[in-house]
Each structure stands twice: as C-alpha cells, then as structure tokens.
Length: 89
Image (cartoon, rainbow, N blue to C red; front, side):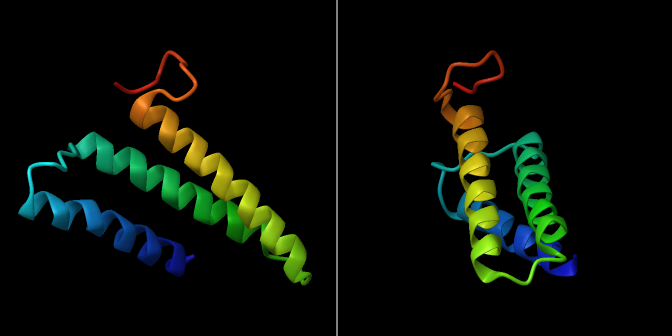
C-alpha cells in the first residue's frame, strides 16, 4: 500500500514542478486532490483486486481495465470528452 502512495506522490510531483517553471500548467489545490484520489484509488483497487491472483495474465487484464477506466474519467474531468454534467472546460 505504501508503493501506491509513493507512485501517486511521484506522479503528482510532475505538474507541481511544471507549475514552477511555466505558466502553461495551472493546477489548483482541488486539481491535486482530485488527481490524487483518482490515482490512489486506482492503485488501491489494483492491489486489492490482484492480491490473491497468481496468474500474470489476469493481473494484466485487471490493470488494463483499471487504466482505461482511469483515463476515461481523467479525460472527462479535464475536457468533457463524453459530455457529462461534471465535465471540465
């Protein structure tokens, strides 16, 4: 579970550092919180779903499904890809 927290923090460090050097990245605290919850939640879901699995192919499939779901939610929140009421922009 600690690995999930470290990976989440490392990923969130990228936009934080980018904000220091360019005005192109402009995240608010709520952006970091939402991204952290999405990333940590996906990581924890993967760990919990694959905890008892020994088949690498099953782990790969679960990881791919969770990654696609994460990317769809992220894209919807960022730019409104699907057009739901909580879409961004």
